[in-house]
Image (tube, rainbow, N blue to C red; front, top):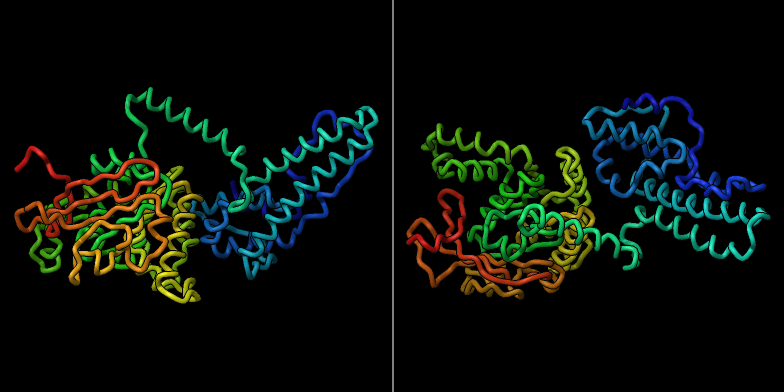
Length: 454
């Protein structure tokens, strides 16, 4: 599809609610919906998106083509160009909207009004249809209202949702999972973590906010990178990093695959043959792993746009988002500067990430630090306690899963290996438990303990 459909006038489009068969012969016609269109607003928003294609990924999940009463075909063309990573094109006479988000909200509101107007139109036609008894009109009103609500549901993110409306989808999902389990002979899992015992406890990474907490240097980033590599074949990964640069994370991941010490690479002692072989083996993961370097200007909405772009690129219905790490992002975020304390920022950001997970129907893994009393530093004991999350009061309540990575002082490991425990301290939907691990900081790997190996 090309964008030349954006050039030239187009007749207004009617709302996406066709007349019922019994209403087509009505003697009176009403056109209330035509009063709720704004061609200039549509063109201004399209021009803004064409000028800044990244805006498309921020708006696409809440603003569909049906919101465009006049320029729907042009919006389709612009969307197709952006999703295909081609430059979009619109007439130069269309000035871009100065506030695209506000304009998108206006178009969504107009669309909702057109839906309600369409209901009024049908009811007005029915009133003048003498072939229909007046006693049927109350039933007709209820039916038309239900149809409008169903068509409008996609535009009401974050608003009122009745459980009865959700129930059919819940039962359908349960039926599909049962069929999948019967077809494969295996239980249906979320996204794999690469740790069999952890997957057995969690059932894989499901939609929701998962917190991975621990003291500095205990292996949180190493574990997060390994989980990202395990997930990548099944779904794309967006890794937001505030502590390490994308180049440093890539080096750690390649060294882990090659069995090379990153310090040897930095000092010029590395075996480049092994390193290149590791890079080639890791390439399939790299092609499905998007690294986003965190700054104070980064917003959760921008991360959502990046995730939607990654999902579109790989034709995926879900992805994994990793935030490394929570406290640093909360402290740096310009959009949270209005909050009085770091604790409030952390809690607000945690809630926003959980909302992001729900909107994308994808898991979010957020790394977090522990306070000195709970962490294994500054005199702390390295406890896997929910109240040890740093700068948090409500974070442990809003999270769906909380994991703690702590030193296993009762187990021994031969240097440079370290014995660590991964404790599932909270799991909203199932069991908790513990996974015994061996951390190799010299080659940036973490593996489960082999019970049959000394």
